[in-house]
Image (tube, rainbow, N blue to C red):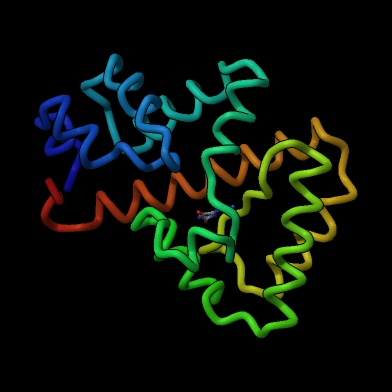
Length: 173
Ligand SMILES: NC(=O)N[C@H]1NC(=O)NC1=O
């Protein structure tokens, strides 16, 4: 799908296709529709990033809270979004040893207790060892730094989801 195909979509089609580029935040996709037609896919991505950057801190934390835990309850109950399911599977989140799984669960809980939002990392750019080591390292950060770091990861996830959709031949309506 190239940018002219994206620009030819109706609003409903656009939100159906791109509504989850930021996990469980179709509001963001609906909001950037205001700026269509887009000059390029990069311009669409930039609109999304600008919208996120303009949010107050509570909005940014809200975006982080829309993310499921890595290797968490939703993975085990099959309740993940299609995108998150693919990302977590590729990063090996479904194949943790019992020791890794309990370490991940313990650190995820500790992280949420400390910051009030979940640990977010672009799973496609990391493997399970790296995810575990980042999680334990980032637990030491200050809250403001960690919120900014989480949002930077959200933008990486968004970029890869956008690329996957644009590269796919037929839009899934
Ligand atoms: N918590 C968290 O990072 N979740 C995610 N990361 C990712 O790449 N996909 C997700 O759902």
